[in-house]
Image (cartoon, rainbow, N blue to C red; front, side, top):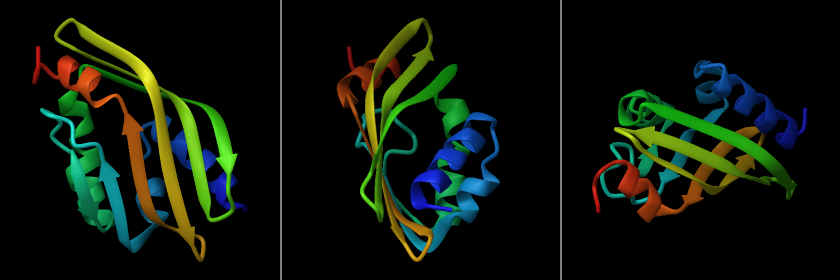
Length: 131
């Protein structure tokens, strides 16, 4: 299975609420980077699958009333895969739907780095952190 096929399967698993396959695909020293978004409980850098599970995935349900991630395009750079899509988040009557880019780095079939790029101000507004 190619790195691209693996990532596409992992997005499917995440969409079904299956987090274990995603964590199992992470290298022991994975670096997981979320935007430095005011009010986001899982912002910043997380290292290792345990930290990603506890400090990112376990925090998403409590951060928003609704979180939808829709992949739209894939860029296959071999050991680097980029997902371009949309993320829609809702909380307390506030909503934002925006473009997102997520970059995945692989080494020896394991994910060694993830970084998500999105409109940090729009997300902070949904979270009620800024006006």
